[in-house]
Image (cartoon, rainbow over all chains, first blue to last red; front, side, top):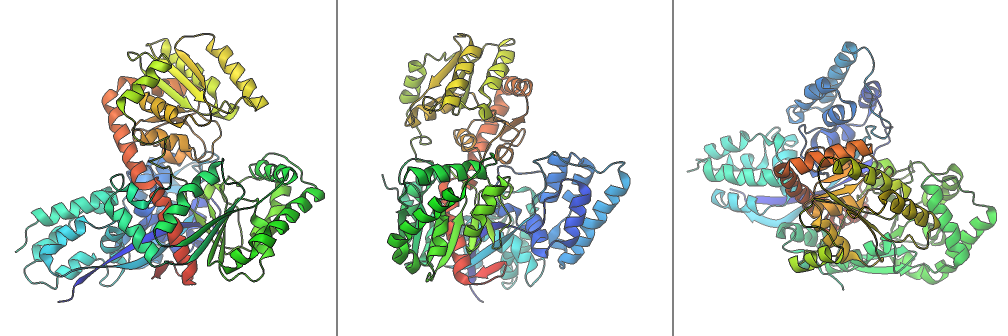
Length: 215
Length: 412
């Protein structure tokens, strides 16, 4: 069996060339044409962006709809989207546009935000590096996770779902190579990561492995 | 005092420190030069004072150079500063020549260092023209804009843009502050130093001494706004809010700031504040010297609620400092305060004295929630707004530029 290679990553946000949106119509039109990196950033990379909130919703569009536009219906519909269920970002874009079009057809005027609260589209560059640390056997994993940075947790538990094998976190994928650890895999896969900050998620993963049972 | 990364252990986790060392290890020996316009005083010098030694500590070969200017040059760059922040100023051709000329003089001295560097970070507009004066540069050049240039005086931006367009990248504090440029524009919010005099833990005796020094009543809830006496900080609005609260319950207010004596506008605002206070013994207007960091620290720690009721603000680091002291903050709904204050989580955004008064009363009433919000606020600052995060983002940027890759994920 191969060792688990602990990677780490850091993220740096950058502006996109997409103009800010002040209302839902503009949001819809910008999302229709923005680069996939922009979409990915606002849906998936939010846990790594410095912020002061642990918001109700994990994608920036839902948060903006709730806090700046005051459209709770739209926020709820956008907020439930799990971006990791979409292997193709174009499918995710289609789903978001479908929701926005539906909402625009329901309202009597185009919901807008105040000047100064526009939605700013951004994207990010992620730098990934090998920490040099290795986990050689499953019993070592909980302690190793407990020592990981937020970047490592993001890379191995969230970002990993977009890599092969798609939809699976790196820890589960590695544990699957060791017979007798099906319970751990199942426990990890049942963690609803949406409502955790990365440091909370690290603690939750450790707790899950410590209580989730393994042979 | 030069601080090393190890001094932050205990305030941030060891994994944060080891991540920074890993990032530094892969840049070890890279020659980095920071250039700004002053060694002492001002926000940029404060940043470089900590950033340079920490970058050296993680293995980079870092130098800090300061351009030399004269009164005419700094008059022009002061106009840049005001113009870039949206004030209508005119810069004539002689002044542009002064700007170019001083940069040319500095380039004679700095050219060998800058052309040899792997990474050059030019801070703010003053030294921005150096790029075009170093034709044999081998490294990557970054322009760091510390100010909000989102709505600049058009003529000033049109004049400055040719000097900054040629950089390999620029950095802005928030996407709201940026301007379109023909290179990648990265976003690095500011941060606070948890070990500085303004933010470090203080002994209870020292805090009590400040309470005693300024005659603050330990039995009355305390509201504190720390900021210079400036209309955009709305000190009169804070007094109006205090007066609305006082009708319902006893409360005391500290308005503390400095720098008004040599600023005619500031002096005028201070006089208006004193007039509005009208001798109320529970309003404490404190004109503090510029180095009264520990006093400010103690006042924020004494506060039940920190206020920053600005009507216009940059990032608003005084809000971050208040949150770091574990206090919920009531702030004006503007600029970077909007990013920091999330209603019911870290504080409240308000638009009027009435709104501020309502939220003050709400927080004074809900002591449990106030304490809970304070704990949460401090943890958000710990995770995201200490110097260690800003250092990590600079190192990440250096890796991005060093990699020569255009991809959104870079493996190093």
